[in-house]
Length: 488
Image (spheres, rainbow, N blue to C red):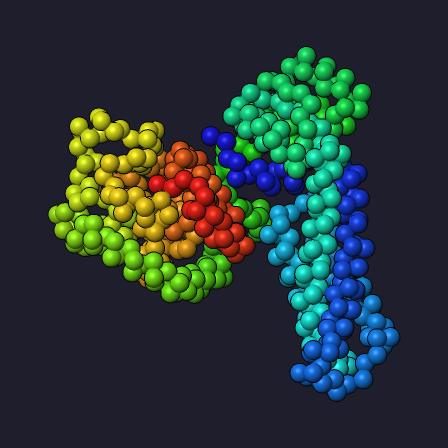
């Protein structure tokens, strides 16, 4: 199983830099200067806008000439701070990562300006202009960078500035990479040719392509390649002046994020399972509490209507929280600990017993063959109201209360039944690292159409690459998926 979670970093970070990439990197400097100067000027004119001055009259004397004389050196300082913050890296970042970096860099730059003003005892006449300049700078710089990114992507779509690579390996990794690069020109990689192995014939053809200036680099897409093959390819690439990259082996894919510490000259690698540690966990829990509370209030009318419909269709408990024998329904949460679970009832009574009925299984089977989960697309146990609330994920609204109780999170891997978790393979248990979620990468990337291995792969990527922006992205994407994609 190839770990696609590695590919975004692999694609952007590890391959060689083209001249066009360097040009776009350099172009960000004057573009940022223009954006920052425009943001500062816009803040000045906003303060003197008639509608605003009518509310808060101007009681200071600050001419545009004096302001610009102060602004331009400040912009130069901000550009310097941007450079230290890594905003001029040649590595292309994701849009969410770019916005985060821009916001942090602008905030740090404004803090530096305030600190300099404080220690130099120079007071700025207008706090509004300062705060407006900070807000405008984030917006203007980010929009400018989106424009540059769009231009760069347009050139890539036209084949300008692409990385011309030869792919070596006949594995699932090579097939996935080939499909990824061929269907996504925005990544900027063009596969010139491919070989199943690094043979003498492959060497000769690669050498000819290099001599004809039709090739930039070699990509070994075989995670199980021997050390001898990797070293041989590395030496060949050095000799032919080609860049060389290779996909990570299974060990590198499994360990997630790692950090190197040195003790007495001895390197010690610390493996981090997830960024959701320390302040990350504190932030996510606070976000869950506020988000769940607001969503409970927003969905109260839907909850009430659902309760009425369920009572009319099938009188009794509107929640699925217990089994016919009286035992509590449970799901497995963080660190493998089970917790009481409930949601709106969507099935007939005693539906759980049919999962162990040989005749039922023989007739309907299990669409999740090869994995521990049980799933039917047209499940005959689901009622009419149940089918509707499942289609739009209304049955899962009570999970917001579980989020408030700390048993679940708004975003994370879906919680599974104890008997399903008991059949997990060792690598599946990675999803138990964090709290289960109402929505997640698997739910917004195909939902039940995914096989279980793909679901685990996506959830593993989320666990290893969590960020506040990723949570927001998945939360905003979820309603679109629920309304316009199939769900069951």
